[in-house]
Length: 80
Image 1: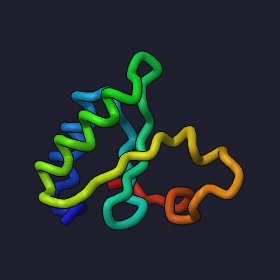
Image 2: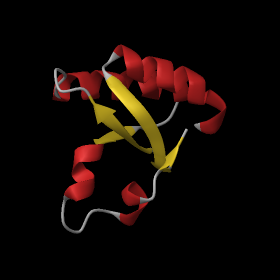
Image 3: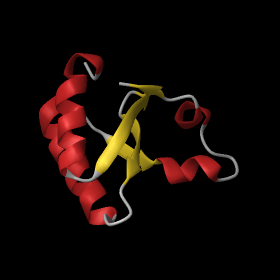
Image 4: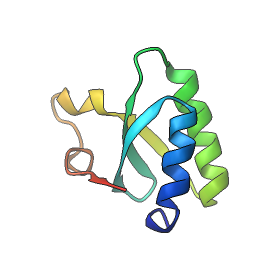
């Protein structure tokens, strides 16, 4: 379902200052959050993405990829 709505998700993400959106696993996306955006923008994107997809969605900032013991699915996420 995510792939079929990739364009709409990317446009939605852009509205919240999120770019380079990638699919990690069902319900998990990775993206670059603009420096001038914060956790509220991420939360609002997640709510809007849930409405669009009709499913749970969590967005992880690409900043988490540098953390120790990060989940492998986030590391190998693929562009939408």
